[in-house]
Every structure is written in structure tokens, then in C-alpha cells.
Length: 349
Image 1: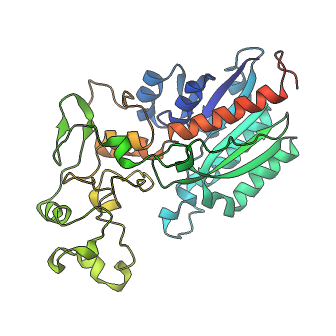
Image 2: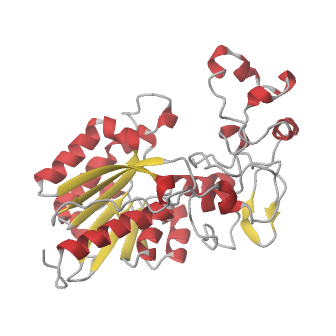
């Protein structure tokens, strides 16, 4: 039995790397961000196609699958329009809103045997998700939707996600949790070398942290793991937090705790003031490498060509937007189990 994957909205390759780790071939990833090309191709045995998904036709994707393969179409449409981090704003004018309809169009044109999608839980509250699910069912797919607590599968974050499966062979069940106890921040990043704010490790250009202003250095010195800015001396508290509107944001300018999960890694995880992203012990924010490892990328994963400069904002976005590799492995393993149960060696149900 042969199966292979095309990864839509592939980013830096978190989902793809998970499939590869589980022994499923990924033929190509498609994304419109050119910064994804180096990490995607360098770390994965797959081609990168720089293209807007709205300009891709189903027959183009179909040509990327070897003859006889069971076709798996996977992807994580950009989640920003649906995320809690939009603070309740109506993002319907965001051009990314309609990308799930493009995903649906490609399923209709291609008719892959397996479809899978990962996204934020809030997506399920929107009509676009109901429409996507209904379109799959109309096309004959057996659709299952699961809310996944990622820490139960070895992702060292407080991160809940939505995983959808569609199969023409029958229902795909998400594999049961793989970890009885969560993997902690300590177990994930403690062994990395110490670095100062604004500096990088000589042996790993990605293990670098953002510079901190003198005031923020004072603030992180005054911060304790698991604490908040409310613990500080009044002179250190930002003016915006003294207002009534700012008092409900205790989770910024805070340190992680060694023996707990990290918060959800966002595209701004390298900034001390952007969340609970202070290092548990060192007086700095997380490094890019630490964020990547909390996203369960292996330590060897490269995000930038060694001949190019490391841009914190650009690489932080790649890491924060990625599907955690371990979650990608869970998705892949669930599909493998399904195919072993439902399909014979010749690819027939």
C-alpha cells in the first residue's frame, strides 16, 4: 500500500516533518511565503512550490502524486482571522478568511482519498468551517473532528487545536494520547547553553534572543517564574497596565516555569513583553531555538541559510505559525492506522 502527501499552506514544514517522521512520503509543500523555501526543502525530502493557493488548480496538484498512490491532501490554513489573539475583532475582511474555501475547491477538483486539516478551536464557531465540513460530506467523505490537547501527545505547550479528518474509506479516529504526564519546559530546553539578552550561541545562530531595553532588563530581573507584572515595584509597571483596560492582561512581561507547560507559542514568542515568554531562569526572552524546540522541531532543524542573516521577526513568524511536529506525527499516525485497517495492499477498501 502506497500513500503520499501534498501539504497546503506548508510554512516551514512542521506538518510535513511529522508525516516524514511517521514514514509517509511528502511530495511537495505549497506556500506563498518565499522565506519558507529554505527550511522546507533543506529539512524535508520534499519540493517547495512558491504559489498562492488561490492560483493552484486541482489537476496541478494531482500531477504531483506518483501513479498508484493513495492521495493525502493536508494543510493548515492561516488561523489569524479566527484566533483569540484578534481580541474579538471581526476579521471577515481579512483576505485569509476565504482560504478554507480554496482548500474545499481543491478537494472537489482533486478527489484525494484522505483530507486532513489542523487549525485553532475558534474556527469551529464560524460558518466557513461548517461549509468546509458540509462540502466534504457532500463529496462522500466520512468526516471526523477532534479537539486535541496537544500536551497529551508530547507537545510541551498549553495548546488546544482542532484536527479534521476526511476519508473516502471510512471514519478516521485520532490515536489515543501518547503521554500520561506532560513534557515540561525544563525537559525541552534546559540543556541549551546560557546566553545573554541580545546575544547568540556561537555554535547555533538560531539560539539567540532579542535585545532588552534597560527598563525591560529591570523588569525581567524583578520577575519570578509563574508571576506577573503585578509583582513588580510600582515604578516598573507600564502606564498602559495602570489603566483599567490594562489590568486584565497579567500574562505579559512574565516568565515561564521550568516544571510546567509553556504557553502557546505565537509568532511573537521572542519578545518579553508579548506574553509569558521570559526564560524561567536567565534574564531574557526565549531564543528562536527554544521556541522551535517548544514547537517540537528537532534541534537540528534549520530555518535560514547559513549565508543569510537571522531576522528575529521573520523566523519567529515561521516558528510560531508552524504546526508542532509532534502534532503532525499524531495526524500521520492516525492516518496510517486507518489505512492499515481499511485498505488492502493494493489500495482497495
